[in-house]
Image (cartoon, rainbow, N blue to C red):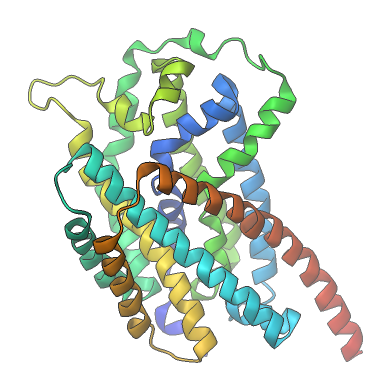
Length: 366
């Protein structure tokens, strides 16, 4: 019997969980990021980032196919020994936990700026932690069910964003490759952050019931994410000049301000409210993966006590410290830089190392 058979998920749940984990709050900031790095050719960098993400995703699945009943936390001590393997595990736990923390404090900051400027961070944190606890405590299956529901619940939101294209200015995209192809390639690095989430396959693969379609599932998830990110970026570039985008912290929300309705004056506020469940998927997924690592290290089966510790730490932090937008940006940039090495470089290295490891193991057995 498989170790994770009690909490298995379907291919559809696997796709939606990866897809919604990838979106997060990156959909609000990506147009500005690529505009800073590449200018109006940033949409090409997004396509290249998507292709690179697919390549690394396939390598991740190929590695996991050799260890179908183990998560990365269990594989690393086998590859590198107990001490080195567990040291890397601790780094991964901190990486995922910090990622969850950045997202939840980031979305609270967005809500305070756009919807509830007079609300205290502590109150908003308590409101967010209720669904975070309820979704996370039951494990992967419950999180994937939540992701599936959120996908259906928010299907109208991409259509609303696309409705703003009515007065698009195509000339904003010209000339293409104005600063050269090398400049576009340099911008790929900044787009990779928005595809973060596929690395969850390192930990979700053992829970997947139909593992033979895992590669198809992760590519579909990446493609769904690309459709949203590319559409939002293209529309923002067509509606705003490059100088205007650089003035916006969250250009996607500014894009929604251009929609005029006889009923609602600020459509971006209800849009943001309905988008919050999407952001919470990123929080609960990264949070659960960090808790899974802690339970693996401590050889415990119940992650709920550790969940309470994290939620209590977030609550206390929200009382005594309110990070500014600039501080969140600096921490997010640091985490993004670290994620490039941990998710992309380390994944490729680990795949190559696994080939050597298994070849050496076969020779040893022979």
